[in-house]
Amino acid sequence: MSDLEQFRRETRAWLEANCPPGARGPGYVPIGSTRIPLEPDTQLWLERMVEKGWTTPTWPKEYGGAGLDKDEYKILIEELQRTGARAPLTGRAVNYIGPTILEFGTDEQKARWLPLCSGGKGAWAMGYSEPGAGSDLANLSTRAVKDGDNWIINGSKIWTSDATNCDYIFILCRTSPDKPKHQGISLILVDMHQPGVKVSPIQLISGESDFCETFFDNAIAPVDDLIGGVDNGWTVGKRLLQFERSTHAGINTSGSEGGRDRSDAVQDLVLQHQGNEDGTVSDTDIREWLTRYRMERQSIEITRQRVVAETKAHAPGFASSAVKLSNALNVQDGDELIMAAMGTQGYEWQPEGSRQSNTAMKRWLYQKSLTIAGGTKEVQMNIIDKRVLGMPD
Image (cartoon, rainbow, N blue to C red; front, side, top):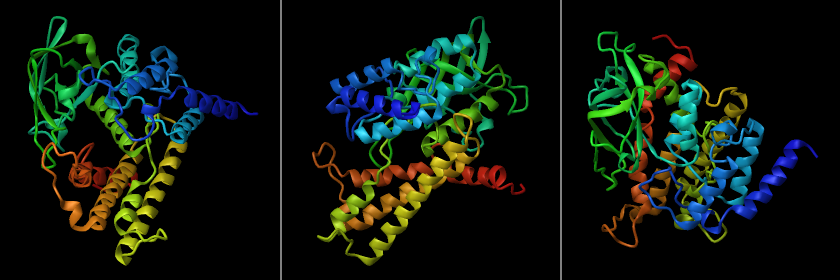
């Protein structure tokens, strides 16, 4: 028996014995927030996976990982999916800022922050965009001024997802205003549990408030919590964006995909509303649409597997933009398909607090953000044109 076969057998046995019933199947996946209480089985699953090092399987053991190689990581994901186990931990701690610190941080920064990330001891928000600096990110104006052992931060960030439930935020700040705009930026880690940080939710058309505006009024961060060197934030920040886009695309092996369900619920919902007794779809147009959707879904999954296999780094470079964009467009197409299959039922809006909330409608509305969040469709296409296809400016 090969070492990988032995690893698979041991992994399968451990998951079957240790994954609680309440952590199997669809459900909430923790982001590490100290503000969100967890169900007992979810909490137990997180604790067991933290002890195993499988919240961040490919990280070094000294930082809370398990030191798995790419082949072992793939087996772990497959066995989590086979068991029906949910991911024990997700979010920007393990998928964005953690890998960035692992790549750019000092030994002291790694020792301080990475065990917190892998241990689910704090959720992170992302402070990039500003009211006057969206796609032109280098135009940001939030300032960080050094004062003794601290940075004093003033300014605001917008579209800071989940900020009301986060404990920390990583932000791009202007630390040298006299330098060209791309050269005077730094990435700083900020504790959100302080008077100088205020969060204001932004109400969305779906009725949710996942997006927020975050204000910094003389907020404080220790000078040692600047990652990658002073005024090197543009380089560090771009790499973090590659981790973000790779996570959206399912090709970031530096965090934890966990047992993310890649199976397709779209077909089940379509059959529920348009299916015949023999399992076929009655409406010709819907049937053809579903076929196209599933073919595209499969091609994206094959591409995802190829990119993971070919990439030596924990997250690919510019290929992440291509997979992220194609995946986002496919997910949106699936939601449009569900709404078409449901007909008028898809557009019913249940009153707030109703036990029969219409998740299809809310999901359809929310998923419109997929081609904005993590880099707009237009930004991704520009990256693909220039960096992947080599097109001229």
